[in-house]
Length: 260
Image (cartoon, rainbow, N blue to C red):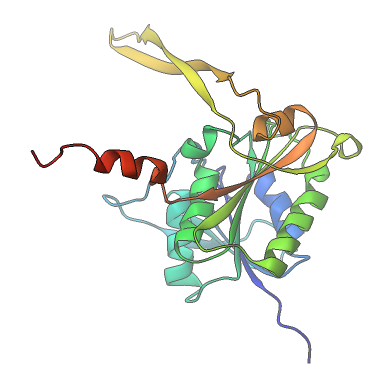
């Protein structure tokens, strides 16, 4: 009796027509049955936002005639896409959710702001094994071919081995030719941050407006971080948990005189 193919939900934050999600779909179709629910427009840096005060639309679309899977374009955020996919379109949990391939890095602190990873985290909250994939190339003309064998290998391993409850994978791929990628490193999230500034300008009507600018600062010298791996030609995998409790501080906090 032939083994049933896994059902794979594909989403992203760059929008349903982005080249990165097209590359991800191609890989997933070699591993299982695919259904796509993705934003109808770019939703980068949305974090884990969900739509509460507006209507949501989710319409079937045909992006490429030769595709034989179903795709839906959603007016909401990446997290919305996962929610509506599981509740209204699939009517059951998929075996896996993959998000990406993002145009740009989601390593270190960027995971907090990432729409790509918010979709993966939302899937994890719903008990679905999930992976977020990102390429360190912001260009719409980014070359995703070198990513594909690593995306396939990582996905196959998750399908075979599963993930612990409450854990999803944050995968970042360096912008390199396939032959120059040295392999895969299991990493921790680098302790890095953005030094941000606002570029203040004035429009022709005299009203002030602002552009957010800044530079990325990595003060983490460890060779076990995602930033080190990417800078040295490796694919980085960071297991991410959405329990934000600072467990190491609970004992100290209990020593405070909070009830006085």
